[in-house]
Image (cartoon, rainbow, N blue to C red; front, side, top):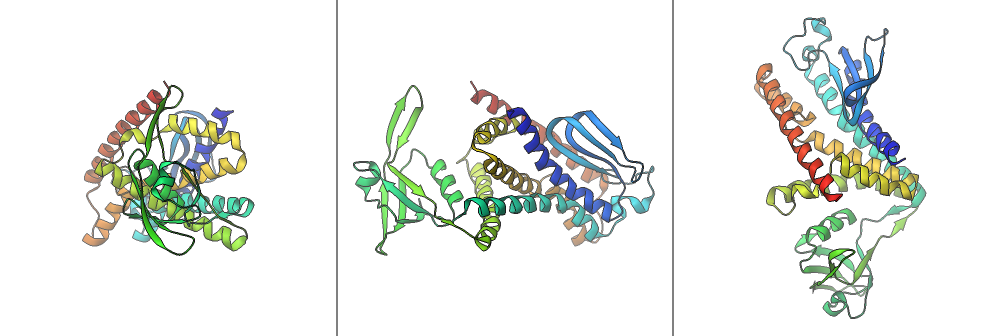
Length: 346
């Protein structure tokens, strides 16, 4: 069942992204050769006589694509020029390229809205729940029900950011700026106790927990849906920053194998947890694709913006070469991440 869930979750995430490209390409009158879910050898395909597009499902559920006329060559001689991507207006090309990312974010908003309606919407405010007596947190003066304002000099704006900062600083001193129940602001520094067992390996004991407040109602759910997407995007910007500065390594990233394991755990907790995972993946896929890097949608948008500034397109051969090199580097990165995922299993 984990394999089935894995295929469904990745399939939905990829399909909604490619559907965005597809819809806007068709709306602009661009000829679409193929709409594919998955990569590698074809498992199934339908050739539509109505719009002359091949709809296919491929073996590996780790991606997908919409193959449009004129997308990767200067001129596609098989298709009339007016049906090629490069013949369309700047705005039509812009919307066709960015539509995949927008559809990913839109699906995430819808899923988080449903979760917020059913479960209630967690507040962005970050509060301490319990402080264990005699623990490092207790000795440092951390108080239950106090609000966390800063952690190690970083202003905390959401629970997801707090989670990230706690994980990055695990094993280090936690310097909290908190707002107590009495309205006082104070700084506490918690020095963890290092523990090691055969079952869990090396762990760090701080002695506190934090909690979420939940709000009910349609407006709260709607607010949560949008703020959660923006919060996750902010969190991913921080992850990129920490990767560049060395606070995080590639070992902290997960590929298809890592996602497979996460799907297996999420499936134990019901449909809403699975929906939340799809929402998280949609935001991840959307964010990564909008980065201005070769082979990503963001890389193509970058060339489109350069075209707007220069007043003429970048030479297609140069652009295609850069995207090809980017794709090779991307495949290399995926190999490294997948290797790390496999090694974590043993």
